[in-house]
Each structure stands twice: as structure tokens, then as C-alpha cells.
Image (tube, rainbow, N blue to C red; front, side, top):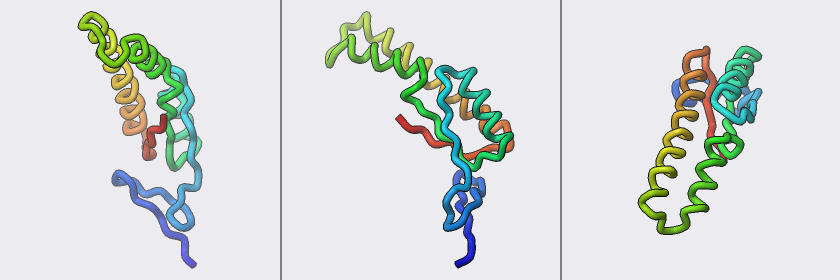
Length: 111
């Protein structure tokens, strides 16, 4: 059986049977740390990056805000939840930008 590769997001991921050779989990608690981990992993030859969204401080704040507001949040709490959600999305965009700016590797989000 010959080795094949996987193409994902326009990038070729080498490996036998199309499976990635090296996958690195990014566990940084914030944007700066996760971006630094992404750059280091790509520099070391990572084929795929996994961003653990559940470990981001922003995601923790979002979950806490949602729990505190319950099923029907008052209008005053809605802005807090929206702000935290926006911060979480900005963190995800920042890591994505760092990955795309480098030689790149597909980024998988897990929670």
C-alpha cells in the first residue's frame, strides 16, 4: 500500500493512509500563549494543530457567564455574555491568524 496524503483547507497533510504524522494540542490559557505555542509547533514540523477551546480563559468566562444568567438572562446580563463571547471569538481569530501567517497547518477546534 502506498502512502497517501490528506488535503485540508488547501494544505497537504502528509502521512500514511492520509493520517497526520504529527498533531499538536495547543493548551495555552489565552491568545498570546496559544499563538506562541502554534508558532513553535509549526516551526517544529507539526502537521495539524488542535486548539483546546475549553482551556481558554475566555471560554471559561463565557461558560460562567452563561451559567450565571440561566435560561432567560436579564437584559443587563446579556451584554456581559455578548462581550465574553466576542472576546472568545477574537481569541480564536488571533490563533487562526497566527497559524495562517506561518507556513501553516490545519487548525482543529475541540471543546
